[in-house]
Amino acid sequence: MRASQRARGEDVALVDSLLRADERRRSSGTRFDELRNEQKQLGKLIPQAKGDEKAELLKRTGVLSAEVKAANAEQNEADEEAQRLLGQLANLLHPDAPIGGEEDFVTLEHVGTPRDFTADGFEPRDHVELGRLLGAIDIERAAKVSGARFYYLTGIGALLELALVNMAIAQAVEAGFTPMLTPALVKPRAMEGTGFLGQAAENVFRLEEDDFYLVGTSEVPLAAYHMDEIIDADKLPLRYAGFSPCFRREAGTYGKDTRGIIRVHQFDKVEMFSYVAPEDAEAEHARLLQWEKDFLNKLELAYRVIDVASGDLGASAYRKFDIEAWIPTQGKFRELTSTSNCTEFQARRLDIRMRGAEGRNRPLATLNGTLCAVPRTIVAILETHQQADGSVTVPEALRPYLGGRTVLEPVTK
Image (cartoon, helix red, strand yellow):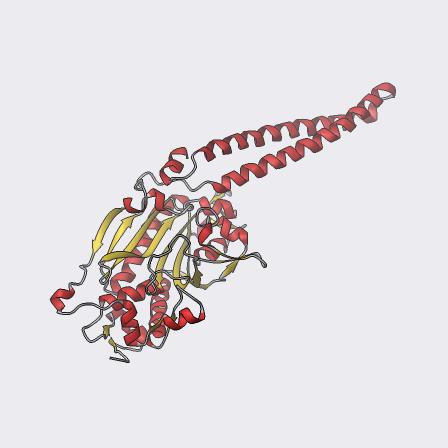
């Protein structure tokens, strides 16, 4: 655990503080049990005692009662401290995860070839200009209404989102996922249990008056869906595909991606979520990654798959793979999806267990994977499949979800 904390760039001393707190919890628990046992023994002796002996026993009973009360308070305090420190620890790190910061990822594969617009004989437009030509994206009016990092999808832009969402849900259902429309507001325990109130807390919107949090991903309500439950092992895996709005403060990103809809405060997303036996988690992680690749292959996008480095993992992730699509006007790959194996981290915090054939209950594993983060997917489609006149060719797999359209035509030249 110390090595994992160090690799993540987290506080290593927290491990030793937790060990001390746990020792205090154990010793105070032992002390409480000893005193309670003495109290019970006295309760048996007093009815049989007489005279001075009984008086001494009664006197000891009074002292012991205060000691038991104090020991109980000490035990509760020690347990709360241990739980508080435990809640600050990130998940253990996969032994094969790259060590380092944001730029220390390992590229696992490249799929497709970034389009060469020089060969096509024109300079590509960025998604903001294309969105304006197509009547698909309105950022100026969104800024007037809501401020920076908001947008309207209008006309074909709105239809494009609905097409992508329906295509993603159709793929998920075919793969055996149960479609879900999830709450966007959750209680503190749901947010904390999934690991989003630690290092990621600065990017979470909170409604303080009502003590609700706005979710940054449907992973949160999907993870909390079975909290405080015991699930029979023969019902696993449980797979859900959640569609929800997502809200992110984007703290610490001042000056980054200020143009367009790459980095916004509100967007829609289809998220895959799996509950599996811990021993099946790594195989499920590979399946989630493949489903993400299948979706992007249908959209005919060039992308790379990366193994995210330790310092760039969320608190709950044991290991995470990102898929980054090529964005022509930026000349680089940008994240479109990610999938994380959270092992038993979230299940323990949310008290979700599985019951095996032998009747023994144990924590299960949870995993998540983005199938379609709408705005960034729209960016990649528009920029990759644009034509010289500002039109955009619709990927073949998406056409049935767009009323059979093969091309998105400009509404203004």
